[in-house]
Amino acid sequence: QNAELRLRWCQIVLKNNLEAEYSKVKDFLHSQGKQKYTLPLYRAMWGGSEATRALAMETFSATAPQLHVNVQNYVKKILGLGGA
Image (cartoon, rainbow, N blue to C red; front, side):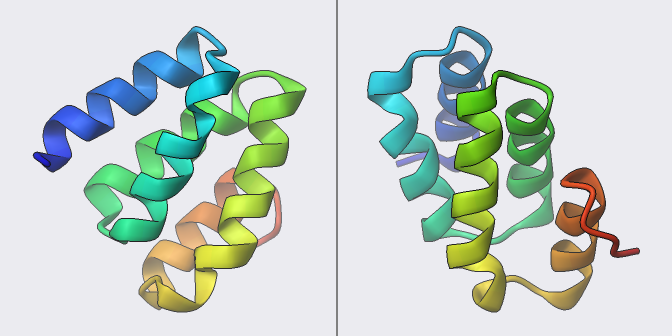
């Protein structure tokens, strides 16, 4: 699928707290690690509900090893874990 479309869909899911679709957000973040797609989703998750914050922490824990070190640091900063 087109990454741009998946990003937009994930943003809609997070903005509207569509919990039934959270797995698609997680799958998208597992499928790629580009900063262009990763950072906006972590910002949306961290700025959302308790459920999206939990999703952010859980997803980052699972995907951090596959991310470039710079992307890891940016996500850590978003999540308040230190970083760049």
